[in-house]
Amino acid sequence: MGSASDTTPPATIAPAPGLRVQLGRQLFGTMPEMADDIVARPGEGEHVFDFCRRLRLGETPEEAISLMAFALQPRPAVWWGHECLKAAPELLTEQDRAMMELCAAWVGEPTEANRYLALDAGLHVAVRGPGAWLALAVGWASGSMAPEGLPPALVPMFAIGRALNAGVLTALARVAQDKRRRMLDHYVGMAEVLAKTA
Image (cartoon, rainbow, N blue to C red):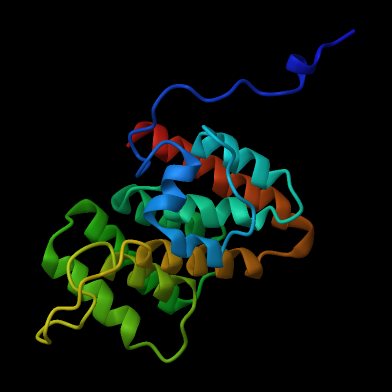
């Protein structure tokens, strides 16, 4: 006969360098705006990964994606968004692909010039699909959220997470209903790997 520990994963102990902070409550403390996107709350001392696992198995598994969008450091976060979109290439538009190229350029070389290229592209699209949201995530990763040449407007810490969340969930919404849960699990799994290896 199995014990409870046979079905309950052990609590996460090892730090993940790709996360902004390690504990869920710390994350909500640094970005209370997350509460607009995630109804559930982490427990006392609950690691981000453990909270994410609980969200993924809960009533609204999409909240696990929202959590990782806010939890990852900017550079791995953008790459995660890029790889989420790339997971279903047949669902991407030409606009998505163009935006993804700008995002990949910034991840490879995170300069202000590359950041502004992505920001301007994301701000000036007629339709804001997942690629455009990803480009805005790059634009809001640091520095000023105002277009180049305008007075600087400091980017709030939560902005990149909000843009990534919109981009990844918009991409997920394009996936056929019968494949959506598997894709969601894939997205979350990629986020955890990136957080551990960043």
